[in-house]
Picture (cartoon, rainbow, N blue to C red):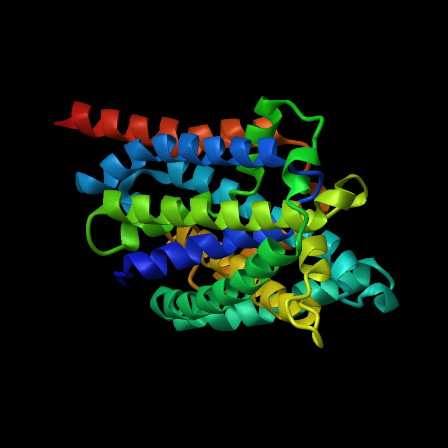
Length: 333
C-alpha cells in the first residue's frame, strides 16, 4: 500500500473543501462563519471513532462489502455534487459552454475533466498526493493575495453590516455542505504515515484556517452587495484588485480550474479505490465507470438545500459506522 505524508493527505482533502467553498451559493456573514467553524468542530469530534478504528489496526479493506458500499455511494453522490457545483459556477466565471447548447457544453466540460482525471488516476495515489501539495501551495499564495487585498482595500463595516436571515443551525448545516472532502478523508486516512490523530488534527486545523480566510475576505470585499451576490467567494475574487494594472479574475480562474480538476480527480480516485475493494474482479475501466456514474448523478442530485441531510450522512459516515466497526472488533475478541 502506498503511504502518504500528513501534508500530502491534508492537501488532497483540502482541495475538495476549497473548491466547495469557491462554489458556495447564498449570502454569508459573520454568523455564517461562526456556524461553519462550529460545523468543523463537530466534524472533528465525529471523526474520532474513525481515528480510533485506524489507530487500533483497522483497515477499510476488511470492514465488509455493505459498509464499503455505503461509503462508495456517499463518495459517488458527492462526486455528482462537485460536477453540479462546477456547472453552476461556470456561468459566473465565464467558462464558455453556452455556445455548445447548454447540456452538451456541460458534458463537454465534464468530459475534458474526466480525461485529465483518468490520466491522474493512472499515476497512482502517491503521485496525485504529491501534485496536490503543489496545487494547494499555488492556491494558498493566490488566496493570500486576495486576503491581503481585502484587508487593505475593503470596508470593515461590512463585518457588522452584513446580515443573513438563516438560523444558526442552518449555518452549521451549510457548513457541512462545503465539506466535500470528508468522504476522501475516510478512505485516505488509512494511507497516511505517522499517527492518525496527528494527521487528523493537522487536516482540520488547515480546514479551519482556510474557511476563516475565504469567508472573512469574501465578507470584506463583497459584503456591500451580498444581497445580490449568488456566489460570494467568486464575486470577492472578481472585485479584488491587489495590483493597479491587473485584476485577480484571471488568476482566480486558473486556480478555480486546477482545483476543480483535482477535487473531482481525487474524489474519483477514492471512489474507484472503494469499487476495487467491493468488486475485486472489476479491474478495467473502474475510474471511467465511476466518472460516468458521477456525471449521471450530477443531473439527478444537485445537493442544494439539503444541509440536514449532509449532517445526517456525515454523522453516519464519520461516527456511526466507525463505532459499529469498533464494537464488532471488540465483540470478535
